[in-house]
Every structure is written in structure tokens, then in C-alpha cells.
Length: 105
Ligand SMILES: Nc1ncnc2c1ncn2[C@@H]1O[C@H](COP(=O)(O)OP(=O)(O)O)[C@@H](O)[C@H]1O
Ligand SMILES: [Mg+2]
Image (cartoon, rainbow, N blue to C red; front, side, top):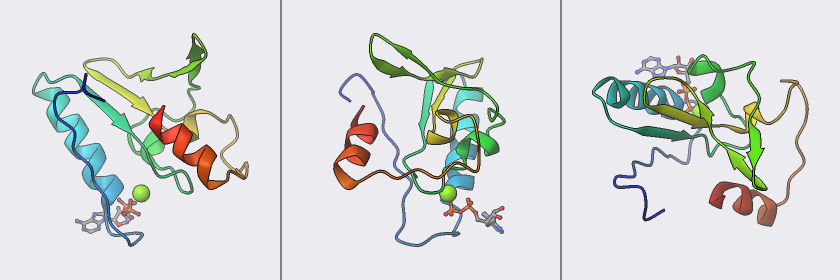
């Protein structure tokens, strides 16, 4: 994490209040200003950033045993759980420790 100069976390305890909308617009806005941006969708239960950023349909690959972010062109990369699974209606049963591991990685 110390390789990342600025970290912006968008969060709330409530669903449907605009977190994803704000996040994706911040990411595109900053990358259009020439900043190198990484967008991490930490919403493991309702990942929507792949769809909202127009990257749905792509699949993440692994590099040296780790998740490789999807290069979106320009200065932007994205990681979303929705990009790990081909099918959008596939249920994901992950427990707390596994979820924390995924977010950390
Ligand atoms: N400023 C806003 N005004 C009106 N509707 C909004 C605004 N921001 C987001 N929305 C809408 O509210 C819904 C939930 O937004 P979303 O970003 O998915 O919320 P969250 O990620 O917090 O669950 C979406 O349909 C989105 O288009
Ligand atoms: Mg959301």
C-alpha cells in the first residue's frame, strides 16, 4: 500500500447511497487529469464497478500467483470481484478471513 501515493476510500454503512457512482466518477475524473488510477471494488457482495466502468465482460488474470488488475487503457486499472467470475449470476460463498485476504491482495 505504501507504493500508492494517495488513497481515497469511498464508504458508508448503507447501501444504495451512491458510493459506486462517486468512486467510478472520481476514478475517471482523476485519470483524465493524467493521474495513474487504480480502482478497487471492495464491495464483494454487490460488485458494480465493472459494469459502471464499462469493463464488464473482461476477466482478470493471475500473474505470479496474484490477481493482476485489468488495464482499462489510459491511466486506469481496475479490480472487481465481478471480473473474477464469468457469470454475473454466480453466487459467491466466502467467509470473513477469505474476504479480508482478497481485499488485502
Ligand atoms: N447523486 C445522485 N443522485 C441521484 N441518484 C444517484 C446519485 N448517485 C447515485 N445515484 C443512483 O443511486 C443508485 C445507487 O447508487 P450506487 O452508486 O450504486 O450506490 P452504492 O454503491 O452506495 O450502493 C444508482 O441507481 C445510482 O444511479
Ligand atoms: Mg456499490
